Image (cartoon, rainbow, N blue to C red; front, side):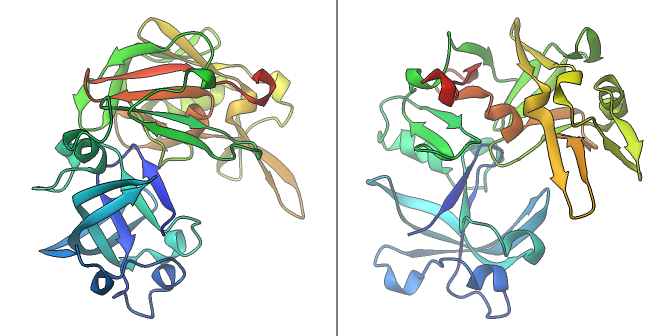
Length: 305
């Protein structure tokens, strides 16, 4: 039994290997795949290495039958991980990562998890949907549905936009605004359940921080902890506005000495946005591989049920 992170920002899957060295603390602390106990295991004979924003993993590829929610997925190629970046993966609550991106960004000669589900007709429709929650409760963490949509988890209707690049769940925004001030124009964005924050192009990072009222303190931007004073940030997608309030994007950091607040926006040296969990907890998201599109709607909160 493995706990995994379903990651819409990548297409490959890996699990810790029982062959990882004892010195690999991140591997030893998690459940490990034991190839020698599986009758359906097949050696692929290729090594792999994956780099994430906060660390990397490496090992070799194997093939086996994957079981998820009572469904068997034979012939699935995944990575057996021998090496983890210790500072990142030693303390994670998940054992491995299941990539939900498409084959264009997957390993050569492999079919990613979601597309293999579709190929083997294990889902009625080649779509999946994600509902994320921040609060504890009956549905702590949220839910992911393969093959369908849970209409009870969002308000109003779903708004769809086509993918601007197939592989990632990438689409085009027409603009990003803080209040009435435009921060960015046409720009690509990726929906990424594997990223906690919102990553944005370095070229407009300072402009956004200034627009939300952030100040530089000890070489970092901080914002007021009085959230009612801060403006909304709007993402214009497909003729609709998807707005984050300060309640969504302000992060409070508390130490024995002080409490400071910062925003959930971080700069990257790429010319696109990555809308991570800060965005996805506010908006229900649908990933439609049949029509090559994504859908968004305002997610319901506990007070809406």
